Image (tube, rainbow, N blue to C red):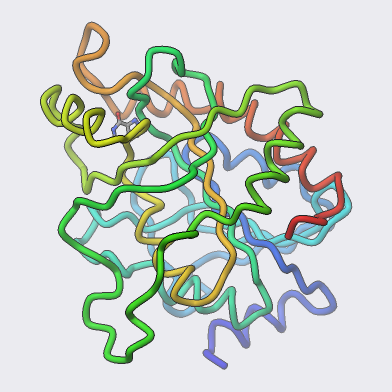
Length: 268
Ligand code: HPA
């Protein structure tokens, strides 16, 4: 067991969560919904990222969420911070060694569909990685040839849709395309992304999904839409807009996730 996993296990005591939730921009408030929270700063977990993006913290918080044990990760490493697509690998390995079998990823994203405006939430059904990089480059074993045909687990998706329905929220579905960032896309890139089948664009999640599948974790992903893609609306995109808008869809996603956990994790 890695040192990080040993430290985490010791800090969690009798709590053995099967599910971990990565909180993207606008969702870090979800940790306040945890009963009996155990807070572990990333700095205490060897290999965890030192996140430097405003709007992102660096803390693992475990506890009981709507009656079920969970680990929440407030803060993630992005490829654009250092050019390392595998920056989240030690953290995900630690979760897996500590007993996590399901990973739910959330992010802020730009929408490529006018009918999915800012404030919407999109369940990721598949992704496009045309970034030219992959977090498993350099992995030496044949395990690196990870199948990605069913990367986003059907059962989890069905469960999240059911939870959305019960919560009275619309959960759009679509394909998430990863752009490295940190610059936003150009209008031409957005038009190209639409043409090849993307519904939303963002700067995270895809490397984590690849790593999670490599580690044998079940995966689900949800995007909080903060803006329309570049060129689809007047004005320039900005990180301020992402941060300002993320809580709107974030509230909606929080309600869906609370309902999902309140149902008792039969889909996990
Ligand atoms: N592009 C990339 N990442 C994003 C966007 C976007 O338009 N909005 C929020 N994250």
